[in-house]
Image (cartoon, rainbow, N blue to C red):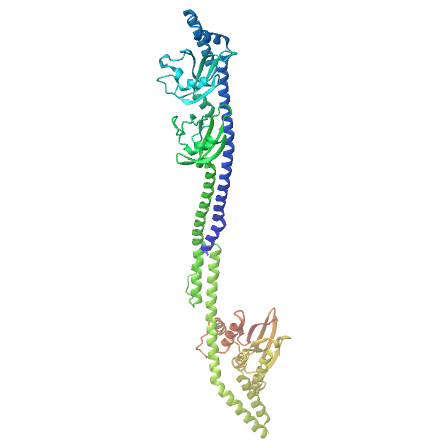
Length: 588
């Protein structure tokens, strides 16, 4: 039973919690992934828009070079009319150019440097460290050639060491364009703006976390920017393998799963409409679904906690319920095998204590019942043995008395014939011992024969009367239960008096019981003798003592057959007679 209850708890609590935790984890996993993907797309679009806005602001700043007349005049005269310009004019033109550069530098945020290349000269802002300037021919550098090729269009250069500078390793982003003379395609110079990566970091810092990384690549797959914790370096395409880069380069926007640094990660990207750069966002799948995992682990913990509770409940159930039941079962089995010396004591005050006490009382009552039953059966065997032993004599006497009666009739001795006939009938009734109970009517027929025989012995000394309640003659009584009482009344009561005496049998109903009284007005009993008789009626029968089989035997037979609440009671007083009362169920 203990195991069944434990299994029931598992099936009704733990197993549903495990299933629930699995379903909740799966649905929350899907919901978190969907929510993250939606939020990631929104973040990427916002970042791409902000980056484009920043780059467009720089482009607008460089566009002023095409509209500034003083700058245009200075560049044209300084570049193409050097031989006609005096030294003072050169200084003046150079100051105009450098003043314009400084004004642009102040309007663009996070600018590392702004330079204008005109002819074979480089003009730069006042903060520029001239010691970093390289003396080689810049017109042959790839970035310069690419810028000139676009002939006025803006050219973006991703993260790289600063062009045409030495001893500078901090990477920058560059925007370059050719400065054309207004209204013509005449090239006056090339403007190069170097931007520190701080500008992009400021845009991305609110979205970057230890789990969420960003990479920006240009249209050729080159790195423009990477998060500091992305594990990427400017000389490679980071840990994004060739297949991942190829997937990104094929589409303008999208998302997929791919391994990064050995961890399965979710990757999504968008392409900037202005710059053509691709902003790539990545996060480990485990990190992305950590909230769902936490929820799943929480429910799983609850499931295992319920399992532990079930185990604790099983232990408590075993100690408080199952173990006492097992002990009680073993004791009851011993009782069933006939052993009544079992220990059914319990100090518990709960339902089990009541159960132990009840079964303990039941065992005691069963033991008493078996002892009484055994005693009654032993008495019955003794009575049957005595009846069988004496059965030959009644048969012989009955037959002999019938022969004497016939002789008395032939000789005309009517009194002797009548007395002998009564004795013969009395012996015939004694021979019929098969019934346990008979009606009061049948029992009285026997008593009347017995009394007539005694009256023939004593003459007018015995006067017999009956005072019966209506309907009492049909009530069942023990067979041969009245004759020993009548005999005691005659022998110990009436026979001891000198004068005539009264012998009365009465019956009455009290509730569901019938009371039969055998009353005589004979010698009676002393108080001590009456007390001994009453005490003997309460004591267990001695089945080996046949001297007192009379009144005690009748009392025990009634109690065995009808129950302990029934039986005989005796009242007597010296010189007043004796009353024996028989209490029986009335059957009503």
